Length: 322
Image (cartoon, helix red, strand yellow):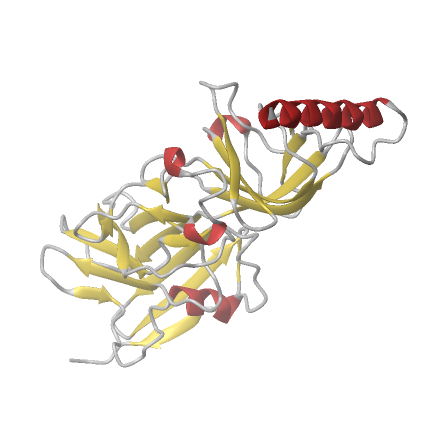
């Protein structure tokens, strides 16, 4: 009998509750999930010029105002189409009205990954500070293949009780190209090892640097007999004025280090210091191609950095005789 009374009371309550929603006053109505539109914007990155065909996929993560994971969405050819910037998309999920964190990583393909894996992000359980992006680094701590383009975007947004909610997520490029040209070396068939050593292989979902052990981006090249130059191009992850990636060049055939020559000068091969000496006001968020030119002769080593096709203030590092 008591159970029957419970069911009758519950039914009456629901009828009264729903009847209040039918009327003009919707105060007592339960919240309804809302659809949304998403735009990955390049407006804040004026030098970010990326064609749609270069982007393979966009992985969107949504966390609520309490930093708990809500849902994820993958945009690629298999699920819909390759992503593009400044285009409107309608995800296949809806959200209850409220405040959210929207995080997008473009081109989460090998050797990029996130922790936990996408399938292990648990709704209401995984928190934003538990999530991490990382570069998959081999046991020898050396990356010897070109890295895919990597973009990151973050936006705090509010879903309102209306049919159209548009979330614009500004994105930034996290990959950089370091082109290195060395002149003045004698012509040989020796192999030269280019190495940029850094600790920039992990990031929080807020886009900040996370703790990462030291590793290297490496490339092996020979001198061009036609041009008599030694060249290399390395793709590295995020750069920042407060970091200190180190560039070294070694003749692998002889074991001789040809750059830097003066090991007493601690920042002589600090890539960021090289750039800042010539471009003290550079914005590392908007500049992603750096041309480092190293000229070696019998008396000194001249280093210049070129961005956007122009060069300023070449610097000299004197060679210290053995």
